[in-house]
Each structure stands twice: as C-alpha cells, then as structure tokens.
Length: 82
View 1: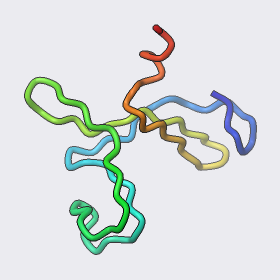
View 2: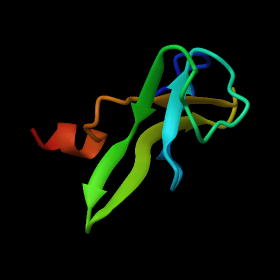
View 3: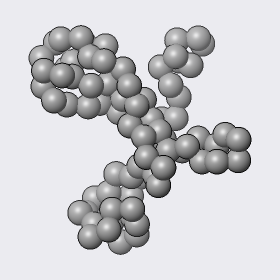
View 4: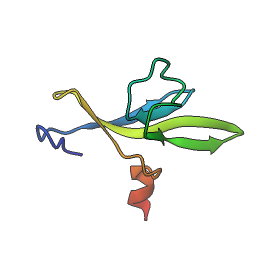
C-alpha cells in the first residue's frame, strides 16, 4: 500500500494488545478502562481457541511515522481472496 501522505510503500503489520485496543474521544486516566471516554470504538476483536485476541492489521509508514488501521474486521488477505 502506498502512503497517502508521502507516496512511499508502507509495511503491513499488526496493532496488538492482550487487554484490548480502543479508540476514544477523550483522553483517559487509565487507558485499559475505556469507560467514560465519550464515543468509544473497540478495534480488532477476534475469538479463537477460547481466548479473545486483540489485534488489527495496520500499515506503517517508516518515513512519515504514521500508521493506518482498517477496523472493519476483515484482513486485507481475506479481502484479496474474495
């Protein structure tokens, strides 16, 4: 994928965390507890082997220091197979 900021090639990887990955409208005093953060979005929840894996594919631009996340729940490899 090309970076929308500089046009260079980006690297595919993952944003991962055992306690969950959340986007919140407000800065929280305890980030692991997204309650009270206004609008909240849980990113990258997968169920596997009885455990919840908190990960989502993300594209990293080493030049711009920006990461793009597609949080619709479908990986790019799944999308390419359709």
